[in-house]
Image 1 (spheres, rainbow, N blue to C red):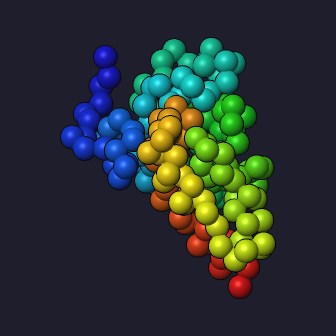
Image 2: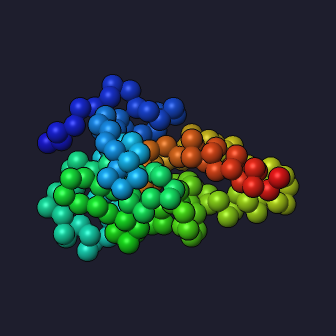
Length: 163
Ligand SMILES: [Zn+2]
């Protein structure tokens, strides 16, 4: 049984994801607020070795600060990139810098598109595929949530960089 209280509505605008644990905690390393993650997200994304060391996967939070090397934390455990089977694209130095895990959009791919055409179809493509075939953010994305916000931010940042 989960000890979390769940929000009535999902934070995902498209409604593709289950409600997330409501709790927020400050990352012990960078001090930024971090959202709770579902057990099934961790079950899917942590390495076997890392899972073996943890008695349960309850109560973790996800730190999205790019310069902070902590990915998941709770009172008795800190997890970083080496505990996770996919590159955490939001973190500095991630390669490839994946931003959409369901449909495989990376910052590299978006940048190449921007360089070639000045625009990117990333958001359009993701939104269309969310409708059909649908997404699995809660088990594929390290944040456990919808990627659209992060993709939008990445596009903005890349455009800024290229000016
Ligand atoms: Zn942090």
